[in-house]
Image 1 (spheres, rainbow, N blue to C red):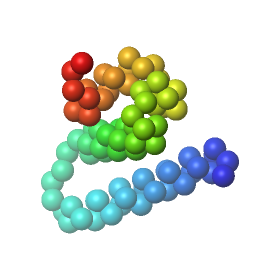
Image 2: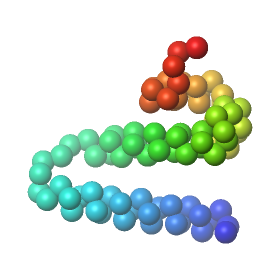
Image 3: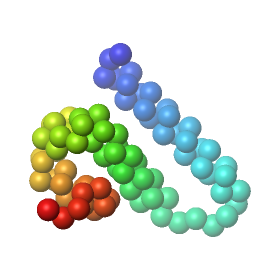
Length: 84
């Protein structure tokens, strides 16, 4: 699958899940949706990539296109890495 098709598929999946979430709110007041979605998406992304790389931070950082230091900061932020 091409990179563009993968991104498009991911965007469609996110849009579908966001629509479902909004329907589930059923008129309830909700604020900060953007922040919530981005935080949850980042958490899921980090979990999946760390699992995919067998916990190898260097490989995970390379796959994500970020530095290992940034990865470690994000893992700590999401409580996926205990301070070492």
